[in-house]
Image 1 (cartoon, rainbow, N blue to C red):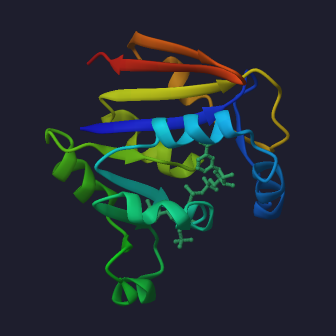
Image 2 (image 1 turned 90 degrees about the horizontal axis):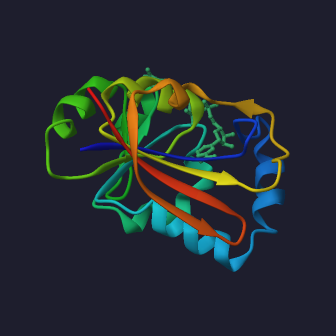
Length: 165
Ligand SMILES: NC(=O)c1ccc[n+]([C@@H]2O[C@H](COP(=O)([O-])OP(=O)(O)OC[C@H]3O[C@@H](n4cnc5c(N)ncnc54)[C@H](OP(=O)(O)O)[C@@H]3O)[C@@H](O)[C@H]2O)c1
């Protein structure tokens, strides 16, 4: 099963094109926010885009498989036991679309765009405060979906949707 997981704000800001700005912001995250991030990004396996990889190196070990999308073919041979670089996202779609195993699509923007048409579930965590980033992603809003769970926590609201086909 394919699930998109997105942290955003009311303006659909999802991140920083300068990763240093991201790390600066993340250094001020509350314990509650970190706990919520751990909760929503949990799953059997994870795929992120190459740009996002530096943001999640500490969590690679939490997944059975950790895939990184890249078109840089020289990286494929450097696959180690923790991270698998891949080019063909459609292979992951066919492996996980109808599987009971959960593949979390962890971002960023270009990676969500690829998997959005194949998602069965969507978790969106919307910050109460405006975010300081400069990357916008709101395509998930036009999905035909039903809200199955909503959790309000100190810092935001997390919505869990099932996607209608
Ligand atoms: N708010 C959140 O929940 C959240 C979560 C994760 C990330 N983010 C944010 O998202 C930002 C990054 O987003 P992004 O869209 O710039 O980058 P991204 O999706 O993380 O990664 C883009 C990279 O993935 C590879 N890629 C993309 N499409 C591909 C394809 N069809 N086939 C093979 N490889 C492909 C390419 O790597 P190569 O250049 O190696 O070919 C590309 O440069 C970060 O700044 C971060 O702040 C936010």
